[in-house]
Length: 141
Image (cartoon, one colour):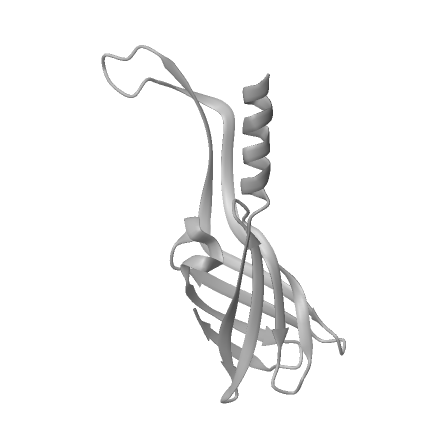
């Protein structure tokens, strides 16, 4: 019982870990600051952006993923292994999207291509955002 409580405590601490950072983009030759927050084992997070004119956008980014669970069986990993394995996996995509709401009523749509999908936004990438007022932002991180 003590081992179970200890393992549960460790898993709770790990899952509570949050990665934060700042990404800089460019819009019409001016710097745009992106502040992000993403959980350690999560495929989504929070973005807060301040445009050169002072408008602030915030919202969620989501990394695409696909999963298969429990419907496929396969024979063990080698020819000498007669065990059966239940396939249950999640594949994380490098494509990430965000829809952000501005404090002045505008919206911003962002598309990112991540360099290292398993690392999330921390792994770097490139992207573009466009506001509902047609302002464009280019991002390399």
